[in-house]
Length: 462
Image 1 (tube, rainbow, N blue to C red):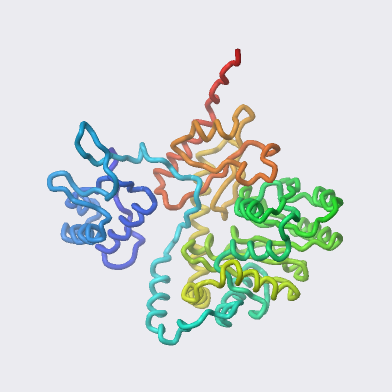
Image 2 (image 1 turned 90 degrees about the vertical axis):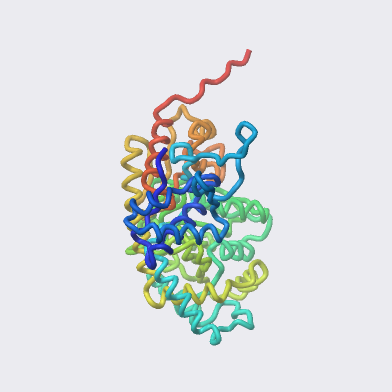
């Protein structure tokens, strides 16, 4: 059984705290599940070239937090339920070979994030008496937060005044408020034939119909959009022009201009979702730069910096602003001012951009691993995306494939398809940065093995 060894080389601070941090991360990510055994202290000290006292101090801290338990003569185990074996309680054993590999959920690389976050939090603690702790922030956010938002948007090629920026608790509340204003219950929203799964959930909850528009290698097809607009009642278009989720497709400038021309011709409002590519530079200018009078632009820091920073920014045509603010207030009140302070500080001092660049570098490295492991199969990917789309051979049904790859979790294309019955069989694969390279490659290899095999034979009906 392969012994888990924490990777602490990139973790700043005292070594015993680095070991603690690595253990906590491994437990939270599932890499160390309940019952997993930690390495013996002396052996871990030798492997990490630390003193036994340093390891003992780290183990003592995680024991005090009730994250692990120690048993004399047996070792240290992650706390959690036990499994009965022959009438006695015993810790279940787990190894990298038997653990499920999560290639479904997003995990940010969090490259070099601990140090800048710690600095920002220490600064906030020093200035806590100067913060507005006794009141809700203004509906659109404090001026300093909106200024930071304008700086973030400018890095994406969208230059707006801070007064035009609305601070939100992430992209999803912004999207929900926009739908509430532009697409009341019973209306139809046009979107790519494969669309963000969060939009599908939101539309279902709000009784909004989605109508898919055909896609090609650059995303939404203008001729198909024109055809859809010929139907009565089309007023809203939701689009992901850059690193479309889940396909990673990106529109060129000409495609964006053609989409905008059709929107103007048919008087469509455009909802531009840039959350999946936030922080990517250099890049093509957002659609909002071409049609600011009809585009609601939404982005956030979750995918580019950290999902723990639930802070987003949006900008919209002036006639919509009051209605959007009212909808945001009703749906989610406003973002935490403390979180917004932290996000604004990271943007203002430049650390957010450095973290985003580091995360993109890690995405590119994982992209190289994935494309190498899945060479020869139908892969759509981009070095700046945290996911890829893996097409399945015609003989495979998505449910059969996911069932046979049961120890590797991926997302069926049905989660993104506006009309699932017409979608080509595929799965989205997350480049889960919480996994170490060994487990990541093992998961990809398993997918490749399943792709190369034959599906289950159907049972004859007699």
